[in-house]
Image (tube, rainbow, N blue to C red):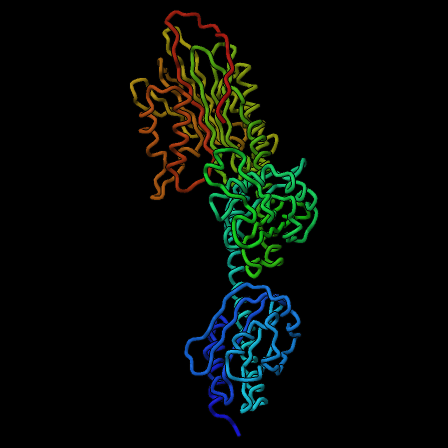
Length: 616
């Protein structure tokens, strides 16, 4: 005959199991129906961690609505023999025969009517087991009781399995989201140290309680970054990463290992993470005064665990990441997740390292394409500024120079090769050195540009360039003769001592386009404290969000710099254009010459020259 009461209760139990977020939530739906079974006086359940650690016991007597609940972490060594195998085991035991040493339920059972304890022991997962039992008297149908216990245990095990599976799926989803976010965060920076700092910040506290990141250098591991969920432990962890010999030796020994390794307990003996109380202390009195605590056992009630993952990218080791955990074992990340995080971090770090190498190579090449020094006498004040606009740092084609001439004048030149990269760099070097050589020999600006054009055509250059050459020749009346010749380049500006700004009228065809091109010169006088400003189109074509170009406000911005020296004018205009632009990434080059003047009738022979380093 079917027991409709128990069937309905079992149905409700399955429904509750499908919604439960923890097995303990099923207690009411399990205990109360079992107590309605004829002959049952007490239902008691236990939860064990490992073979002998009692974590939880719950008991409910017939006629009572208040369960007895004991939450503990008591070791019961004799209970280890009760640990079941893979299948549930139902046992009948006389209450009188129960030994308190192995049966914590015994005291409750002896105070309850019933001579027999019917108990089902079962395994929940690899970390522990559980039991569910009832105290019955002689009137009970023990076989029916055993059947109900087995059915209830089936539901409990299924519920626990479902919770674990849903937890794994949620954890997997969270891990995937974290890995995706980590990739975005790490890939958004091409600075090596910033990328490494982001690796540490992303991992704490989502992955671990603390993190240390090291780069692998030729001389060994180099500490870069550390972070900890407890702010007061931050400096202690940084000190470990920077100075601890135990960790440095371990990282050096593991530099070629690919698998993530977890270390805990005796494996951490002698380390700053040991749970023996010998944790690393602060290195000075100020650290102690701040209340900084050890990173090891004293920091929490859970034993310290560390994991070390090698950062390997493109077949080479670039560093390592060490995670510090002070949390339950169940909350430790899996090796597969750590390997995936390490792989992503390694690729981001390697990209940043490659970018850094490229950046250094590009900047070094760029330096050789520009003069390292500018000539200075008491007749003029010279300065230059160069701002790289390309975020990928390809070599630009902007160049400038200042050349003393045999007659005591000085030639200023600035140019811009179309495009970027190695070909543009080669053409930049050819153009600057050709013009410099010709102007040093006293060649006039127009002829110098014509000869450069001829050289470009003979070399079959695939790119064109623009340039302007201006000479400043001292005059007996204290002024200077400004002679300007342009090949399709933006016209220079003159800032007069009274604050007015004028444009030097120039014109001429681009260099490298047609054969046998001639260039005409324009002459005008400049007086003491007048300033000549030569620039490339990266300055004028900086564009704000509304679409306006910096060219439209350049005269006003230049006029506001009246009275400043050449260095301030060059740097100020560059920074203003950089701050102004919302779009555009062309390089900006400026060459500024302020004429200081010479007393009327003074000797106009070439003055002694000094060389000053130019800004680049």
